[in-house]
Image (cartoon, rainbow, N blue to C red; front, side):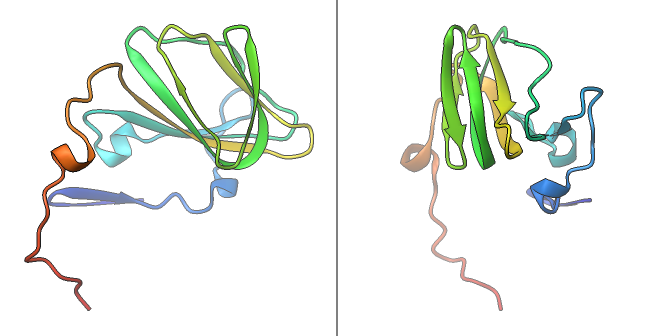
Length: 139
């Protein structure tokens, strides 16, 4: 369920372990662009059951992807390199890099994947942030 009010949209998916949108290969995956009204990025939430894996390797034409592991552990193959990932791991992947993930045999792997056009970020943190001293917390 999403709520849109002027200047923001709120979505609550609940616990990641409760994701119910199953793909044909048994993963739970939810793309969030439409639900959140995103205009400069895409984000998805994926849960792979213990012992499972993504069904194919892929790359992108323009978008880099940031993978953020939020639960569990597994491995990620990036071109010919295999790395271990676990809760707290973050991996930024260039568009042309071939990638796939698999969960460990003993626990599911849940991750967020943020996609944005490579080299499109022009302002960030202090350069883009504007303080609003007039705002205070409402009770």
